[in-house]
Image 1 (cartoon, helix red, strand yellow):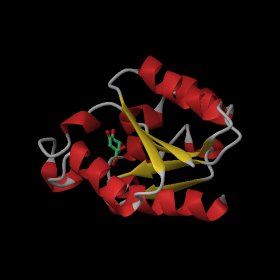
Image 2 (cartoon, helix red, strand yellow; image 1 turned 45 degrees about the vertical axis):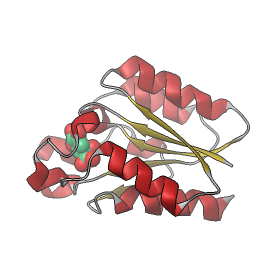
Image 3 (cartoon, helix red, strand yellow; image 1 turned 90 degrees about the vertical axis):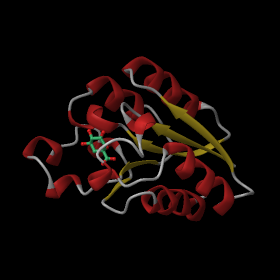
Image 4 (cartoon, helix red, strand yellow; image 1 turned 90 degrees about the horizontal axis):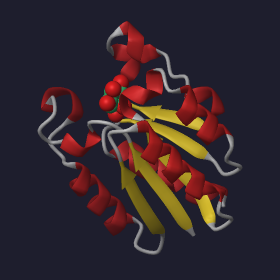
Length: 141
Ligand code: DQA
């Protein structure tokens, strides 16, 4: 089974970016941990600081061989209707993941315009959140 792992803006600078909030692991560390934990799953990783490539990556989820999508849209979470529409078009589960507990932070982070079209949301468990999301998709298939 193939699973898409899609990360949005500023997640490419994890490790350097506000480590007190996001931790010291880099995105590369997170991706490698996932590959080690799920060696039999075809994990496909995408990251972009722009909306368009994230939407294009989500469109790959229309391919019948994709089992699900793990999506951390970064700040786009809070205002991108275009990413929401792309996620809504998918028939496979999309799991929204946040490293930080967005509900314990600034007011604007409490709203996700994407969550209503997702199967569920995982927030506040750091890199472990991505693993939990992959586990869920595997259980569903
Ligand atoms: C984030 C939370 C967002 O509010 C923020 O803009 C990010 C990262 C997280 O993983 O905790 O870029 O998605």
